[in-house]
Image 1 (cartoon, rainbow, N blue to C red):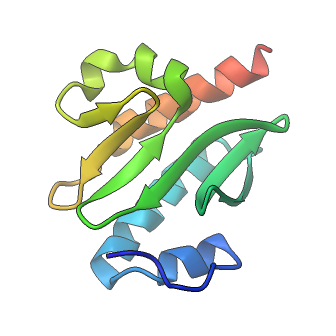
Image 2: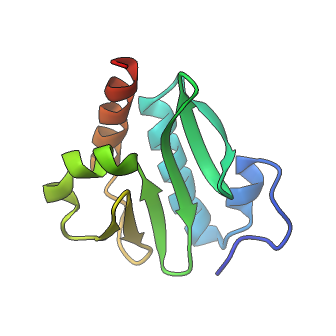
Length: 121
């Protein structure tokens, strides 16, 4: 499953380009980020929803065929390496399988960590 062939103009269009069950998970991800980073600016970046705080990247997420990718920069992932250990990861990314519930509390903690990190700069 890939997003629509034309480039979406908004995060709403991006989310709407996925099947209904995936849309629900993407909306959960979006809501969790917005709840814990209300001052962050939401926009599409790198072809997926991204959030900036003080003009600096905060977090990103994206839908894929079998997972939702979450990108909290390498520092965000390093700080939560033990909690993220059950999931497939890259240097600054983690994959949450579509056949499992999203770990919304963990995502919230990671977003709060990144907000504090960016506010401290």
